[in-house]
Image 1 (spheres, helix red, strand yellow):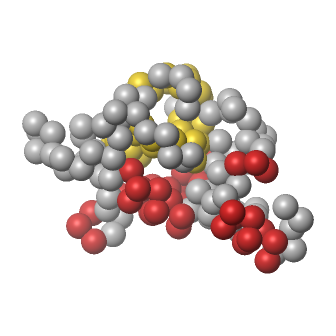
Image 2 (spheres, rainbow, N blue to C red):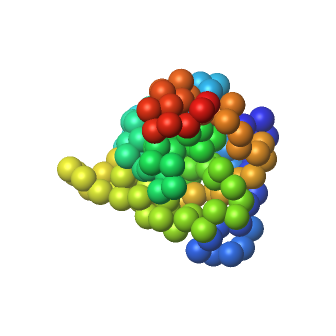
Length: 153
């Protein structure tokens, strides 16, 4: 993300929220200072690693295409605050997609459950539409998966 702040409506709240992006990393590997820090902040809460969150998000599958949201290029950025709450900047292949709740539920399951309670304490998804998603955002692995399903990408 090239901006320091992202604003979008969340499906649950219906209100616009502003999320500071101070310790974020984008899926193209550009990190801002502090991205991925795992050191425990003053409150004693250990922060999840950005790479671990991105890996866990590969368990979140787009219900229509059957490919994970990371390889589809739908995860634009990840931020973990001092309370170990992850804010994910995500988009969808279409702004009219009716499956935001399904993807949000899968993301929450992937990141907050498991041995020891999960990677993060909670998640927030900041649905963003700029830049718009396009096939250029799909990873090489995602392209291979789509080709194996018969898509021409």
